[in-house]
Length: 152
Image (cartoon, rainbow, N blue to C red; front, side):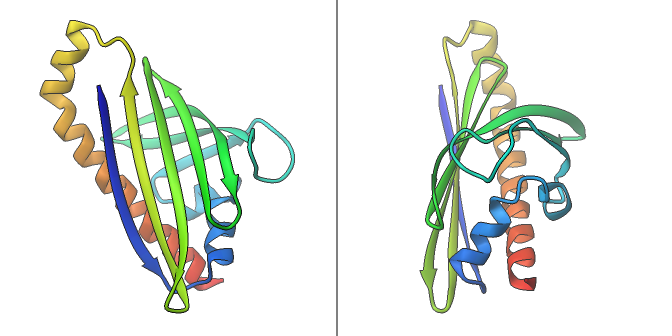
C-alpha cells in the first residue's frame, strides 16, 4: 500500500535562505507550528545521517517519531525518512530558483509493508481522512517555512 502527497509553494527568498530554514532541525519547533518539540540525536551540521526525534500534533494527538536525513544536496534537495507502525515514510524537499525566489516542493509518501487485513480495513475507513490531515499539515509547514525564510 503506497500513498503520497505532493505540494509546492513559491517563496520570496533565495534557495540558500530556504535551505537554512528547512535544515535548521533544532529551530524547527519554533518555525513549524505543528511541531511541539525536537530532540537531536546526532551532533554536527545537517547532512546524511543526521537523526532526531520530532513530536507533532496531528488530529489532536501528539506523537513522537524518530527521523533521519537519507539524502542532502545543498541547496537543491533533501530526503527525510521515518519508520513507524509498520510503515516507511519519506519526505522529499526540492528547491528550485525562480523569479528571484524559490519554488519549494515537498513530496510525502508512506508505504505499509505486508499490510494485514485489519490494516487494509483501517486504510479504507480512515485513509482519506489521514491523507487530508497530512495534506493540511504539509500546507501549513510550507507556509511556516516561507514566512521564516522571507523574514531573514
